[in-house]
Amino acid sequence: MEFPATDKALATVLRGIPGLVFALFFAAIIYIPTRRDHEIRLEKLRLEARKAKDQTEATSKPNSKTDLPHPPPLKASDHFNDRKHHLLLAATGSVATIKLPNILASLAHHPNLSIRVLVTPSACSFLQSQSPEQPSLASLLVLPNVEAIYRDEDEWIVPWTRGAPILHIELRRWADLMVVAPLSANSLAKISLGLSSDLVSSVIRAWDATGLIDEPRPGVALPYGEDRDRKGILVAPAMNTAMWNHPATIRHMATLEEWSVGKGGWIEVLRPIEKDLACGDMGGGAMKEWKDIVGVIEKRLGLTGDEEYVAVDGKK
Ligand SMILES: Cc1cc2nc3c(=O)[nH]c(=O)nc-3n(C[C@H](O)[C@H](O)[C@H](O)COP(=O)(O)O)c2cc1C
Ligand SMILES: *[C@@H]1O[C@H](CO)[C@@H](O)[C@H](O)[C@H]1NC(C)=O
Image (cartoon, rainbow, N blue to C red):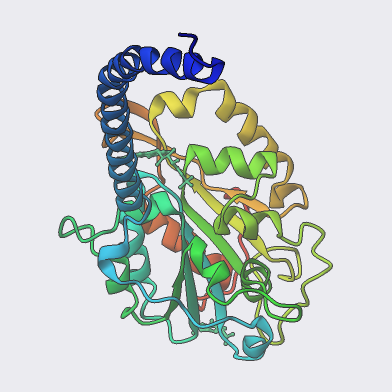
């Protein structure tokens, strides 16, 4: 008896089934564990990424423990006629940042001084109340004359809209004298190259190098110029001896020298001193003694009552 063609085809298919089942079974044996391995590997990667993210968050917000408040928006024009001397005091990431509390405390007795403090993220790390000489930044806000402490994130507390004040510009307009003490090797390099990647370097980059933009304030002598009519930036570099002796430093310092108040510019450098450094090396690069820095600040702002003008670089 002849089977019809369709039945023949059906028989072929039926005969193929065990082979197909076997092939599927074999594929599953190989595929399922491979897939499980793949998922385990993915989950491991996800965990690692989460751990890394937590770690960077912890280190990039070193000051989160201190609850430093965001200062209110600043409009320099609101303070133009306050008859106070305006000191913008910045600290960048150096061991000498721990002198900031001393500097602020010894300027606290002046009745006509107003201070705004700037800190880089790295400078924040040195003042987290980790030791008695390293109080939190927030604790410095109670010192007399300290109006506010600004960090990078304060540029963007209120999302900017047209007409709103821009923090680094308002700080520049507000300041009679900007002091960077300590000035780290990194921030020195940034200044000399014109980089402006954080709040401190943005203020410095937006400085009125011509002396023609910011109006002199009535009744307030400015730190520089024959007629005490020029604002300026006073910097106190502080770094490891090897960093100080590095050819990059020599190049960057030469640039600051070109822009120095002695040459009609806007920068005054308080050169480092030689001593045993906190890192164990001995040699140049240590920040000038903080008491001497306070003395220079008082002289430049005219806070001593002794109004004799001492030209920069120690020359009368
Ligand atoms: C404990 C410690 C001490 C440091 N001391 C100095 C220093 O005295 N001078 C310096 O230029 N850099 C020093 N550094 C390196 C700077 O903090 C680092 O270069 C940082 O990027 C500087 O950033 P800033 O200029 O934005 O503050 C130190 C780093 C650490 C961790
Ligand atoms: C602030 O006080 C000092 C010291 O008494 C004085 O020399 C200076 O002129 C005062 N500055 C202003 C702007 O009144």
